[in-house]
Every structure is written in C-alpha cells, then in structure tokens.
Length: 194
Image (cartoon, rainbow, N blue to C red; front, side, top):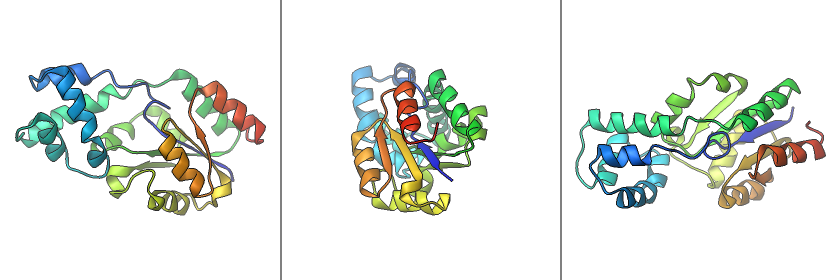
C-alpha cells in the first residue's frame, strides 16, 4: 500500500485568521502578541500545556478556564480548509491509497481536528503535542513509519516548511514542498499514485 501523508496548517487548512481576536482577548498589542504567539509555538507543539503556553504568550499567569478559551479560539482559527486540498484527498482515497495526517500541533488542537468530517478519510491522525516530539526530529519519521507499518519508499509526504521536507527526505521518504493541490496532483500522477 502507498501512503500519502499530509501536514495540516497551510496545506489542508488556510492560515489562521484568529490572531487579532486572540490579541484582543488578552488586551495585547497585535504585533507584540503575534511575535510571542510564534516565538513559543514550537514548545506548545511539543507538548507544553495550554495554560503554560498562553501564560507565556500573555506575559502573565492565566487560569485554566482562560487558557482553554484561548486554545479554542486558536484552534477554530485554523479550521478553514482549502477546498482544492480536500478534493485531492478524496481522489487519493478513491484510488485506494492510505492517508495519514502528521501535524506539529498542540494536543488541544488535535482534539478539535479529530471532530472534522474530512478526517474520516484518514487512517492515522498524528499530532506532535501528543508525542512530545515534532517534525523534523528523526524520531517523528520513525514513529510515522511504525504507525503506518510502512517503509519510507511507500510514503509521499507534503508539507509547507522546507525544514520538514528535509527531515522526511533524510528518512528516505518522498517529501515534497507544498505549493498547491494542483502541483501535488501532478507529482502523484508522475509516481503512479493518481
């Protein structure tokens, strides 16, 4: 079986639109908020708790309720999907290939994504926050292949970050920088998947 593995943010989903709302909820300057949001995101993706992440971003201690509310606003901001990508996913599934999601994302976000209807097409949904490792760590590719029961050459991986593409390629996976669903479809056709 061939496996097609997708990143989530800015591959399946559009870039978040929630940052202004999050800054407003914290009473923060938007530019300063966005800087802190991204500066600490890798730690959050690697398993930092909601309350620790949002307190760090806010620059002050926050309670569990406030942190959960911010995590929900944040998650919903990433829920608008690219229709062209969803159409490609449907084509891959109809062709009988396996689908997996491999996302650097906090656990709370993973629980939101799991509720989305399109995820039923995926045999595996893997979120870095649950594993406390993240792309491009070598351990992440080993975990992916273990879960899929696959060899590297059985997989095609799409991601929008070159560092993750480099990590997957180093593990022997056919890794492609995401440009568009159309370009991905062209590659999948060239390698006999579509």
